[in-house]
Amino acid sequence: MGLAPRPFAVAVTGAAVFAVCTVASSLGVRWMVDRVILPRFAGADIDEGALAAGAAIVIGIGVVRATGIVVRRGFAGMAEWRAAERLAHGLLARMSAQPVPWHRRHMVGDLVARCGVDVDVAVGVMAPMPFSSSVVVMVVAAAGFLLATDLVLGGIATALLPALLAVNLVYQRRIDTHYVDAQRELGLLSEAVHESFDGVVVVKAFGAEDRETARLARIAGRLRDAQVRAVAVRSTFEALLDATPSLANVLLLAVGALRVRDAAMTLGDLASVLYLFTLLAFPLRIIGHLLSEIPHSLAGWRRVVEVVDAPIENDPRASIGTADAATPVVLSGVEVAHGAGAPVLRGVDLTLSAGSTTALVGATGCGKTTLLHAIAGLVPVSAGRVGLATPRVGLVFQEAFLFADSLRFNITLGMQVSETALWDALEVADAAELVRELDNGLDTTLGERGSGLSGGQRQRIALARALALGAELLLLDDTTSALDAGTEARVLANLRGMRRTVTTLVVASRPSTIALADEVVHLRDGRVAARGTHESLMARHRDYRDLMTAFETERGAERAEMRGARP
Image 1: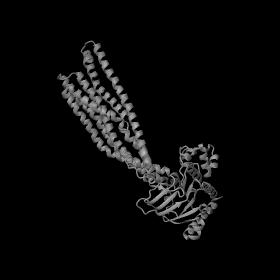
Image 2: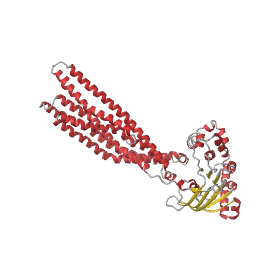
Image 3: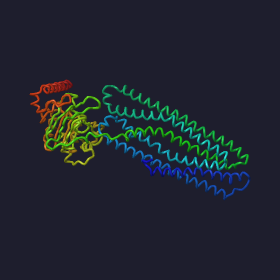
Image 4: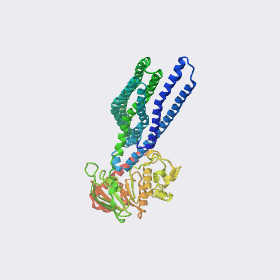
């Protein structure tokens, strides 16, 4: 309600008007029975004045009652969707404020479920709540009217109302755990489906469709079982709520007939009591609907609040210090550990000169990617210090991610970038000709994750993105791995031509590429084992020579495999 207080307050006001008019409508029934219908049965002429007055009472109350319904429904819906909007925006803002390590610990599918299904479920209770609040007003007013009409019959009717509410309370307690289970399983299913669809290529490539289908079926089965249990409890509750008012009306009719026979009340009084109790049966079911929605909404609300109330974790970028322009990157004693495991990086000391191109080489698992992520502020440094001379860092991943949008958006990310800067970036990334050859150029719409482009083309577009957005420090995580040797050489030569504006640190595994760098840093077991030019390292460090030999052997095997695959 605090998410949409004004429309909710209007909805409650409309519901209160509806409640008062519902009780007041029984006055019109009493008037018409006692002053129009019964005299006519007794043989008297129709009292036109009484008929007109009764009609005015019934129609007037009906119009006001209908107005209350329109106001309640319209503003209740407005309150619900406005609350959903604000809750979703707050949830997304909270997620956006969390640093990369937080996102890596959470499954994408689960977060999507929280922003969509859980938000909708959390606010679902707001629609019936104004009506349910009117039921409280209605019950109090009706109890007063019933007791004032006839103390005995009113007492019985008033005593039956708490019995109906008690059925609802018992139901709420029994249904709560089933809805919590169902909502949790729904989140797990969304998480699993998103992961499965995201990895559809792997699933297809290894023929794992049946196994993946079975895995999803097991989760869906648990969701089905939880929902079936909830529906079973709900169906029992619905049957009780349907039967109770009908049985109560039979009791009231029997007692009321005796009271009329004894002249303790008029037939109009009895008709108004039965009419009012019948009217109350449906609103009491709305309370049941509200109580059935509360556990469901609470289950969704708890999942939303888990994220909204989670403390904002420290952003690793906030711990990055400064460096001078001559050495824009300074690492001193840097140590990085993932979780409680052994450190991936151990006491790394490294400086990069302005405008230089440095190749970072090492065996698989030595910490090359972690080092780039630490410099970019994506992972926290457990010890030591990272200092940068510029906040304009462009990290280009080996697996380039592109959005299902236009090429222009994928390069600019919706930011203001001049055409000149955009095409200059494409030229440096050796992607300008690629874009020109497309039918719609920069306005070409890509498929999901850039489908339609090869791996090398996606890498070049991702590199152009970093350059177009003004990166002064480029961190290339084996970004040119999908390029042929000639294209890679052109790209690196173009980057070397930007010495005055860009400093580049590139993870590389091709000896030909490594030889183009101004300096090479050899990383081994999370430490800087050696640094210098490619030639000097080849001459002085056996481990480095062995690594280069391994790279050459690997490349030779790849070339032989490609030759063997040609027709």
